[in-house]
Each structure stands twice: as C-alpha cells, then as structure tokens.
Length: 175
Image 1: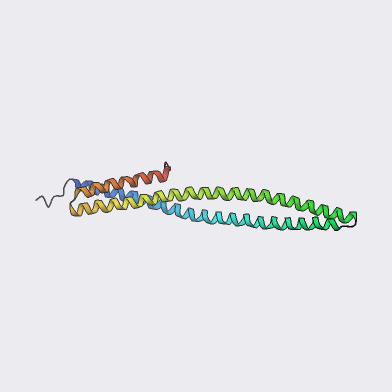
Image 2 (image 1 turned 30 degrees about the vertical axis):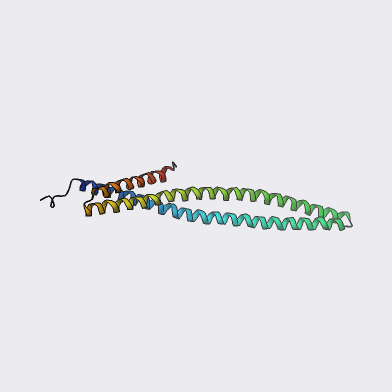
C-alpha cells in the first residue's frame, strides 16, 4: 500500500517543478527579448560609427582642399586672386569646424549606444543564467521524484533558488 500512495514530499516536487518551469518561461522570454535588442543596438552602433568615419573622410577632404588653397595663395599675383583664395580658405575652415562638431556629436551618440548595448547584453545574460539554473533545478527535481531520492529534489530546490536570483537580477541589475 505504501507504493500506491505517493509520498508527501512528491507534492513539493510538483510545486517546485511548476515554479521553476514558470521561472524558466519568463526568463527565456526576457532573454530572447534582450538578445534581439542587443542585435539591433549592435547594428545601430556600427551604423553610427560608419557615419562618423564618413564625416572623418569628408573632413579630411576639406582639410586637403584648404591646404591646396593655402599653397595657391602663395602663388597668387593679383589681389582679386588672393581675396578669392582667402575666402575659399575661410569657407573650408568653417566646414572643417562643422565636421569636427558633427563628429563629436556622432561619437558621443555611438558611445551612448554602446553603453546601452552593454547593459542590454548584461541583462540578457542574467535571464539566460536564470533559464539554465531553472532547467537544472527541474531536471534534479524530476529525477529525484523518479528515483524517489528526496536529496535530489532538495538539490533541485537549491539550484532553482539561483534561478530566482538571476531572474530578479535581470529585472533589477543589483550585481
């Protein structure tokens, strides 16, 4: 008759397994969200750095053109030529300063995107760890029930507790 009736701790196994399955489901969903967001932010950051490089190339071309006018002004013979070349030099100086400002803004934006991406990756990894620990806890609890080994179930609870810690940390980023 003892074999037919389930042991009292088997209800605990069922509850533990259910709780850990819910934790795994939530953590898996959040992990997938943060993985997708990290991929988008990585692409966006790369795009911003490419834009920065394009501005650098344009600035370099403007600097080269400015130097060309500076050399040309040395060979100018009339005051009209010198005045026109000086005006061109001044125009390129303003362009170079504009490119400098734009590059600084773009760099700051790209760095901010990189920082946000690092935070997103960190959160996603916490949720991924929660999935791993909850799956191990489920496995240990299930095997403990099959083998009627209470200590395996207790080990599953301990491992499952870590999944709760990682899940909470994914939401709160305490450590």
